[in-house]
Image (cartoon, rainbow, N blue to C red):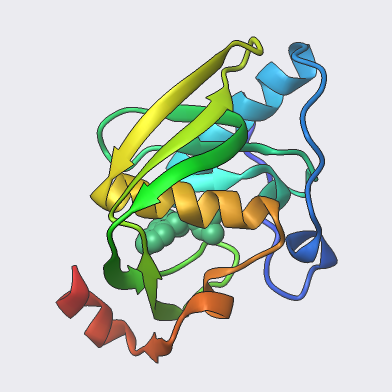
Length: 157
Ligand code: GNR
Ligand code: NI
């Protein structure tokens, strides 16, 4: 197992459109495993491949109810609205208020290439949106309508 270095804001890789995963091979398994380890070590609730410098469409998410691996994720339905504080491991020390759908359905492939759908609500829906945005070079600071002081963040949780 290995952790990887998390790319921070200012690096071009965070602003590129990631390419679809085409090969569901050993390298992908290693990448997903390293991403999970890196996420847990950094105490994040999600991590997208571009954050470890790999421009491919793969994300891992764990908001505290088990890990999800989404390869080539596409949000196919969304409804409602929620508004909450967000941060990002690639944007250290900054927090902002972002609108996200309350509920969504995401279509993705698993690590073997098998398609599946996941329904997400609440915080899991936030994490899915935040991570899929990373695959398109979008950061939460682009969508935040107000940045927060760290003390204010606690009030939104
Ligand atoms: O760890 C993270 N916390 C978080 C909090 C609120 C909304 C989104 C997130 S994702 C972030 C990890 C990260 O940067 N993933 O890309
Ligand atoms: Ni992030």
